[in-house]
Amino acid sequence: MGASKNVPTDPLKITVAGAGIFGIWQALTLARAGHRVRLLDREPVPFAASASRLAGAMIAPYCEAESADPLVRDFGLSAARIWHETYPGLVRNGSLVVASSRDQSELRRFARMTVGHETVSGERFEALEPRLAERFSSGLYYPDEAHMTTPEAMRELLDLARAAGAQAHFGSHLEDEDIAQADVVVDCRGMGASDTLEGLRGVRGERLVVRARDVTLGRPVRLLHPRHPLYVVPWTEERFLIGATVIESEDTSLTTVRSALELLGLAYALHPAFGEAEVLELSAGVRPAFADNVPRVVIGPDKRIIHVNGAFRHGFLLAPVMAEIVRDVLAGQLSNHPLLQRR
Ligand SMILES: Cc1cc2nc3c(=O)[nH]c(=O)nc-3n(C[C@H](O)[C@H](O)[C@H](O)COP(=O)(O)OP(=O)(O)OC[C@H]3O[C@@H](n4cnc5c(N)ncnc54)[C@H](O)[C@@H]3O)c2cc1C
Image 1 (cartoon, rainbow, N blue to C red):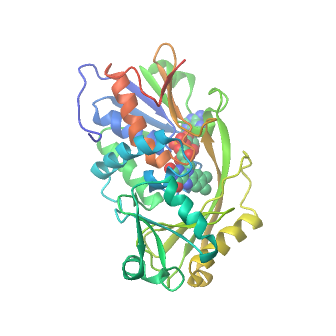
Image 2: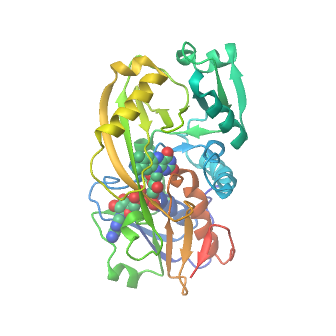
C-alpha cells in the first residue's frame, strides 16, 4: 500500500527534523496517516545543504543489488511500488547497463550479480537508445526500474507533504523545546545527527550536472568500468546528471579535478556529444552511512525519539519503506523488521 490516508484514533504531534529525502517522506506518510506533523530544517533555503539534492535518484533495486546488501533489493522492490503509487513525476522507462568492448567481462559479472534484466542487442538495443548504438552493440536492460529529476522531485514531494497537512519550517534548527513539545521526534538530520547516532559515518560523493543539446537518452545508463563505474541520468530540459564518486571520507570540500576528469571522461566515452555539453554544476557532498551501508530506523527505549538514517546510496530508493516502518510502529502494528533497530 502507498502512503494512504489512515486517520489514527489518537493523532500524535510529530516533529520531523531534517527535510532531506528521508524527512520529506516521513512528513508525507505521517501526515497522510492523520498525525499533526511539523517538518523542520535548519537551512533557510529548502534542500540547500542536504545530501539528497545531489542524488541520482534512480529507483533501481535490481542494479543496486550488484553491490548492496540483499535487504536493499528486497525492500527496494516494495519501495518502488510506493513511489509508483505516490509520485506522478516518476519516469518508468527502465535502466540500461553497458560496457566498452574492453570491459565486457564487467558486463557479464554485473549480469551474474543481478536479476530483473534482459540482454539487448542489435535492433532492440538501437530502438531503446539510438544515440548509443554507434558505440555499444549490447547491454543489460532492466525494464522495471525508474528515475526522476531530483530537484523537481524533492519540491513536488514537499508540496504533497504540505497538501497532506504537514507544516514545513525552513531556517529552524531542532531545539530542546521542539523535542519537549512533540509526542514523537523523527530525527532525519542525516550527517547532522552524527554526534548523537552511534556508528554513523560519511561517504563522500561528487557529481556533475550538464546541459547537452545533442544527446538524448530515454533512461539512466550505467557505464561499467573496473575502477570508475558511472551513471548518467537524463533530467528534464536537456540536463543530465553524471555521477558519482564513492570515497571513504567526510571531506566536504569542492569537487577535485581528478574526480571531474573521471566523470567527464567517462561521459565522453559514453557519447562524444557530451564533449559539447555545458557544465551547469560540479558538486560534492557526504552520504550518511552505517557500517553495512544499510539504512535503519533506530528507536530509543521510550519510542519518543526515532532516528531514520544511514541512507548511503539508497535514500531515494528506500525512503518510502522507512516512512511506512515508522508509521506502523507508531500505530502499534509493527514490532520487528529487518530495517528496525531498538536500543
Ligand atoms: C554525489 C551523490 C550521489 C548520490 N546518489 C544517490 C542516488 O543515486 N540515489 C540515492 O538514493 N542516494 C544517493 N545519494 C545519497 C543520498 O543522497 C543520501 O544518502 C540521502 O539523500 C540522505 O538523505 P537524508 O534525508 O538522510 O539526509 P539529507 O538529505 O542530508 O538531509 C538531512 C537534512 O537535515 C538538515 N539538518 C541537519 N541538522 C539539522 C538540525 N540540527 N536541525 C534541523 N535540520 C537539520 C539538513 O539541512 C538536511 O536538509 C547520493 C549522494 C551523493 C553525495
